[in-house]
Each structure stands twice: as C-alpha cells, then as structure tokens.
Length: 286
Image (cartoon, rainbow, N blue to C red; front, side):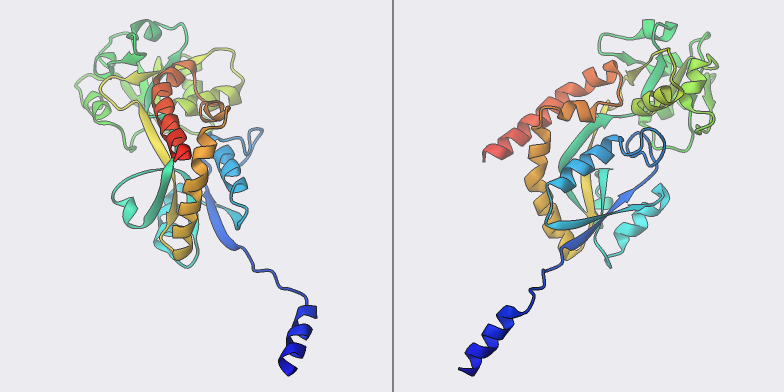
C-alpha cells in the first residue's frame, strides 16, 4: 500500500525532460565555405550543408563556435566536449584523433583562374585543363599564387622552374586574388576557384572569372563531417551517416555544392558528384 502511495505521489510531480546532448560545431572565417560576416553571412557552402544536416538531427543540441583555422586541431585533441567540423578533408594522421562521416561534399582542388575571354582561356584543352609547367614559361603571361600552402606536386614543379613567371603574393580582403586579375596586374591566379568567385561577387565586377584544372593534378576533393573521439561523437557519427544519403538525394544538392563555382569547375566535378550520389542512393535502398 505504501509503495502504491509513493508511486502515485511521484506521478504528480513535474517530469524532468532529459537534456539533449550538446554538439559544438566549429566555424572559421573561410569564405565561401563558411561566411561569418557581410552580405553573404551564413550562405557559405558548408554553412548551408551544416544547417540542413543539423535540422535532421533534432535529438542533439547544436552550438556554433567561431575559431581560427590554426586552432581547430587543438579542439580535436581535447575530449572534454564533443566538437565537429563540416567539410574536412581526410588524412590518416587526422583519423587518429577524429571520427569521419560518409562523404558530405565534393569540391575542386587548386585551379588556374583567369578572366573569361582572355588569352589564357584560348590555351585550355578539351577537358578544361592547363599545363601549369608550360604556362609559367610563357613570355607574355604573369601568374600569381600565395606561398606556404599545400599545393599539388605539379604546382611545386612549376614554381621551382628557372624563369617561372609567378608572383608570390599574400591574398587579403584588401588585395584579393580577383582584384589582381580584374585589374590586369596578372593574367592568372592559382587559387581555389570558389574563392575567386566569392571575391568577384563581393567586388560586384562585370567581368567574369573562370577556372581551369591543372594538368596532372587531382581536380577534385571529397570532404566529410569530422568529430573528436568521444563516446557521444561515435554515436553522433552513426546518426549523421543515416541522414547524409538524404542530403545527397535532395533535388537541389548540386546547386548547393556548386553555388560558388564557375561553369568550368562544375563540369569537371559533375562526374564525381553523380558517382557519389549513386552510392548514396544505393545506401538508401539497403
């Protein structure tokens, strides 16, 4: 009788809802992947993908945390909280301290960017490629690149050639790569094509910038969701992998992934996009 009375009393007490587990999503100021200020704020490729993904995971509490690119690695070495990043590239070294999801996005590698209709465009082959090693030796052309970055081997070969006409320049918001091109100070720029498209739109330039893939360099990269190795993160990645195929099969997914790309880059990436999308459709059929 006493037990019954205690249970009845307990039923009258307000029920305490179990608090959803918290996931911290790291953001960096790296437009147009993630855009944290200005007229395009929140419209970066990974901003939009992250918004769509977290909407499919209502069982978690999602928090945003702005940090610098240089500090991201330290977050993944700490297991006091569960942190994740959108659009990370896979490496074996990183996988020691991180969980990786199924593929989330496909994007371009470093490309040769130029103004549409310029002499550089006339040198493209049928696969929208240029041989950078020959380009840097052209007597009438000057290129620009930002030093101290992880370039493909063909880029390193071009830089070290004797007489290479390549200007090393630190690209900034005040002197961005698109401004160098549009002002005709250089004929081409080595940079991710989405960065040039973002700067071109920021400058509201009338001229069109296009990109060409580097001959003998991988023209695309696949990126993922990555989280530090906590117990929660292991379950989270499993839940993320359940909904990623739904993202890929959305009718406008290509539009989201390629929003900040020129038509040449899109043509180069489309076969890889279609291949991954078919893989995701197969997972949904299982």
